[in-house]
Length: 417
Image: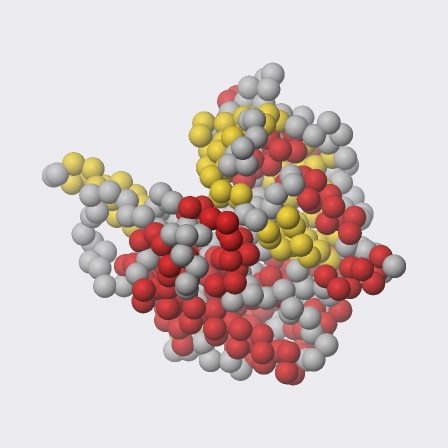
C-alpha cells in the first residue's frame, strides 16, 4: 500500500514515523510550501528516519519516507491513500495540484477535516470523482504533538482515547475496509469510530474552542500591552469562558435539532456537545469533570500549552503580543466557525454567542465575514461556508451533498451483511 502525506508540520512528522514503521506500507511526502520539501529531506536521518516518542509507554518509533518532493507528479501517482494534514486553508491548492495524478477509487481525506472539507473536495475534484472514491475526514487530530527537531524527531504529548471519522465510500460499499486502514495507519490508539456524515463533523468542529478561548482571555485586555511571557491557553480559561464554550455548543446543538425536525431521516447521531467531546477525547486525562471550565483547567493533555504569540522588542527586553495570524484564527474562523454560522443561517437558527466570538475575532484578524448579522463580508470568499459554493437554501444544500444518504455507524453493519 502506498500512502501520500501532504504537508510538513507536526502531524506529518508523527504520521511519517508511524506509517513508515509499517513493513507493508510505503509512505511519500508532498509539500508545496516553498523550500519545505528540500529542508525536510536535508534534515532527515538517512538510516532511521523520524524518531517519535509518545505517551503510550512504548519505545520510540522510527519511520522513514520513501520520497519527499514538491512535485505532485513525482509522488502522487499510484497512491492508495492520500492524507492532507495541513492548514485547511491550503486544502484547495493541494487538491487542485494533485487532481491530475489521482487514481480512481483512491482513499483521500484530511486529518482533521475541519468544517466544509467535503464541499471543498467536491468543488475541486468534482462530484463524480468524489462519489467514486472514499472521502474521509477525522473530527480532530489523533494526538497533541510537537516537532522536537525538524525532519528528525517529534513528540506526542497526548494521545486521544477515541475519535470519530466520517467516511463516504462509493455507494453500496462498506466503510469497514477504509476504517480498518485508517486505524492501522494511526496505530491502536486512539480508537477510530465512524461518525454520522460530513455534516455532523462540520457542525461538531472542536476547533470552535480556540477562537472562543482567545476571545474569553483577551476580551477585557489592552492588546497593545506586551506580556512578559506567553500565557497558558487551555488552563488559563476563566469560568465565563467555560460558559461561553458551552453556549456556543448549545447553539450548534440547536442547529442540529432544527435539522432533525425538518429532515427526520438525517443522521446526526455522532454530534456531541463540547463537554461530551472533551470526555470522549480525554476521559483518562481530566482531573475534574464537573464542567467544561474544570475539565480544561485540569486536563493533563493540555498542560503547558500557551497562547500563540509573537516576540516584540521593548526597552525592557523581549516581550510577547498575541499572534492573530496563527491558525487558531486564520484556519478556525474561515474553515470552522464561519462554516457553522453559514449552516445556521440556512436553517434559520440564531447564534448570538457564536456571532459575538466571530465578530471579535474578525476584528483582531483584520478580516470581515459577518456584517450586521449576515454573512456578507468582503472576505467571505476565503471561507468554506455553504454560501460560497452557491447554496442559498437548506434543502438543496442537504440533498446535493448527499447528507441524507450518508452512512452512520449502524449502517456499517447493515452494509457489511
